[in-house]
Each structure stands twice: as structure tokens, then as C-alpha cells.
Length: 306
Image (cartoon, rainbow, N blue to C red; front, side):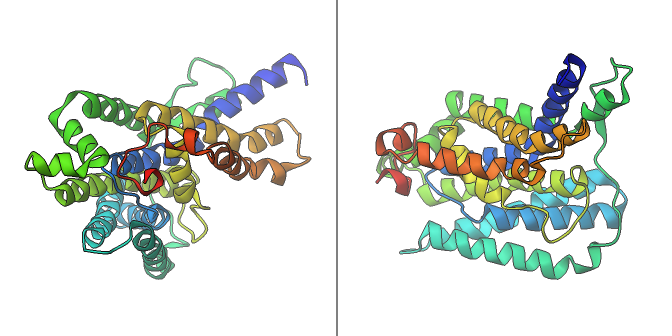
């Protein structure tokens, strides 16, 4: 591989990391907020698929991609609210409810989204970060989803809010010691329902990114398990929003290696490269399987820390 080809591949992987990593970013940030309150939402795969369908449908019917983005967020919030309410009932498991929510969300999306498989909806505009280059390949690789900067801003706000605001203190208290939160007069269930709902809204924006930016269509295999991968990603990020950003770019870059190599004519092992995000997920789960490493930074009320 000569120097020019290497630069082209590096730029393609960078652009692909942003493009592929944007849904990971939103879903992981939503789950990070949810888990910091002491609740796990394994139904994110259903939230992601359902919000992707709702966002695509909203954009198609209204002609506005931003209306689709808003509808996707609201759809994710509605499913997450249902999860939060059910988990607040006595003797209800977060894990079992999350699995049920995943099945519900994907089932509703597949049923309601049948008429949306063929139509085309208006897409979220791209930011031309490659305008400085005369190369069409560079310009195409660095055409960044306009939702990505919004995700970076939300990561910054979430990190700041958890560390410096009353809201952040209450969320962290509910996640670390429900008894302390109750002693100060806060409703632990109320805090967790609110955090789960907001987390679902943020995850829903990841669904909009899938159907309205990359790959930019609606079909039943759109998510490919990204909602479940995001749960492992939050553990890898040690429940820190800024680390979620880095982890999302890492996973996005892993998913972009295959297309980047194919763009310069390296097609051998293409499907193997496509499996890199899933192999990376397994590697992270294995690396985090030690109790000492897995519990570092975990909210004390999560099941993994009991």
C-alpha cells in the first residue's frame, strides 16, 4: 500500500468512524444516563429499531428530516417510559422487562414499517468537513451526519450535568444509594423513570441517524444488534459520557475498516472485516469479565454490582 492509498484509507476510516459511530454514540449516551440512575435497559435494540422506523415514517410523511428526528426521539422516549414504569412495579426484573421491550419494539417496527420499505424519505443534511480537499473521495468520506455534533454537545452537557448540577447529583445518588436518596426526600422510582425516559429519547436519535443518514433507508435488518452492543459499550466506557464518545468512534472505526479497504480495491476478507464490531464487543466483554475491572465505576445499585 503506497502513501496515498494509506492516507485515503485513514481518511475513509475516520469518516466511517463518525458515520457508523453516530448511532452508537446516541444509544450509549442514553444508556449511560439510564444506568447512572441505577436501572438497566436491555430493550435498547427495540428502541433503536422502532425509533428508526418512526423517524423514517415521520420524514416521509412530512417531507422534513428534522420532523422525523423529533418523532424518532419521542418514540424512543415512549418505549423507554414504558420500561421505566414497568420496572418500578414490585418484584419486576429490569433484565426481563428489557428483553420484553426489545421484542415489543422490534415487532411493532416490523409490523408498522412494512409500507415504508420501498419509499424514500428526505435525509438529514451532511456537514461538508472535506470541503478543504479537491479529492471527491475525501469530500465524500468527510461528509458528516449533522446529528454527530449534536451528540458531541450532548456528551459534554451530560458529563457536566452529572458532575455539577443538582439533577446530576440526584441521578447519581439514585444509582449509588437509593436509601440515601429516599432519606433526602427524593422518589427513587421517579428519578429512574425520568432518566430512563430521557435516555430513550437520546437513543431514539440514534435510530433516526440509522434510517435518515447512514444507511439512510428503512428495512427490517437495519440495526444489526447495535442497541445490544451499546450496552457493552457503556461498560467499556465505565459509565462516563466522554468515554462513550471515544468508544462509539472506536466501534464506528472498526465497522468502517472493511468499506475503506474495499474503496482502494482490497476486497479479500471483506465479510471478516464486517464482523470486527462484533468481535470487538466479545473482546470487551471478556476483558471486563473480571469482577474488579467490571465493577470499576459502576453505579452501586446496578445488578452487576450487587
